[in-house]
Length: 271
Image (cartoon, rainbow, N blue to C red):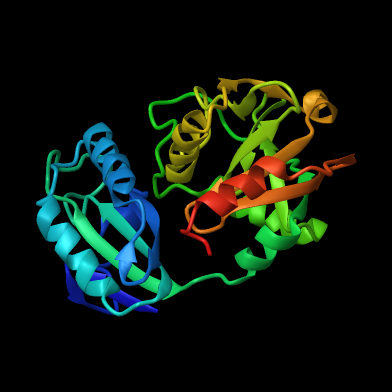
């Protein structure tokens, strides 16, 4: 793994960084392919919104993009994570507001098992761990990812490749590290509403737009667990995995993958 701090190669972060001590920051994980970051405009929109909502100043985005381009040069396939923190801007909860965020960037190998997942599909289980609802951070990919850490622990204990997660009311929200789309043979494509909790994924936004361009109706609404048997096809998505069909959620099996395959064929990002 390669690591940069504010654009310079580094191997450590200051011990008083508020991202480390308070989770005071946010991040995005990007697919590097052929020396370039895929879907940069959508990642930029995500980062800009999070800066605004967390009270960070906006950096020189041309400089940030130049750093990204330098890190990705001659890299065929990899993952690039860009993290913004409030830096060393004050001890305790009272920090300095509208400061330029500290930039942490890391380049790591691409998880090649996603290719096998795309081809074969995977089975998922229903999670026991629920997501908290409400709050001003809904939709943001902040550094407070302990719910996801607990979900990965639960998945390991269950021997599951993926978990489907609900909120406290039992409504399906997303998978442990990806968003969810559900398809009926003759009805609209459904993706769970993220008004109360969950992460608004970059690939989720990309696919909603692409599906609409394909003539599909996309509905964002609450989805109950007991609705699962009414769907013919289910797939999960994030920037790195692209589109991965689910063969089963709990005891409910899905045999179709028509729309997932169509999306995979139309996207060259993951091939």
